Image 1 (cartoon, rainbow, N blue to C red):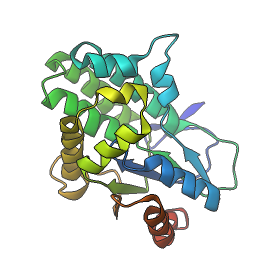
Image 2 (cartoon, one colour; image 1 turned 45 degrees about the horizontal axis):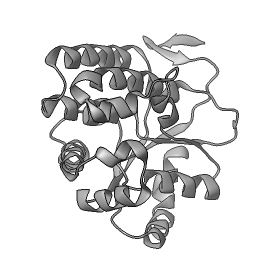
Image 3 (cartoon, helix red, strand yellow; image 1 turned 30 degrees about the vertical axis):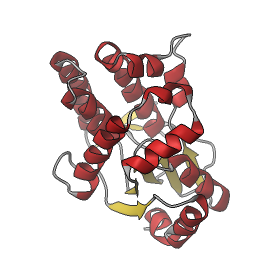
Length: 231
């Protein structure tokens, strides 16, 4: 159930948890980061609901969007916005963990992926306007706290190589140029801070390295990351 707090809707019965969002390009290593902390810390981990995006009552809007973004961009992004909002508001049984770590957020869904569709000319202006109205209403009327953004900063070339190695069906059509566009939007948002507003402080972790180096970097940054849960 939702109730009102300072004019915004909040989830009833949800104890205060620090919320850490892991952000970065496609194949920047977000899943590996989440797995590492889920195994080594007392935290809740919420991955992106990709399985939902691949199967909405038998339909695959994720694949459709990659095949024809002008037609299916608003379909996918409307559903992404809904499912990410559900992730932000979800309650999980593990009540003893002071930290919730999420893969991306409703903010990057709008500030990165919707913006990219629109700026690349693959989303009609009316679709963009409708999604923006929805997003603005959500963040105005629903409490979506974020305490820290961890940005896994990668080069588009590294992401492209990793994509080819992991061979996810929907990702086979993703060109390097798409990853370059996503990268620039992330840089403008989280590094240059010249585009959309930041909902939380940002911790940048260079993520072009191999697995062992990345695991050691997560360990080196553990205290900074988890400190969000121990104010």
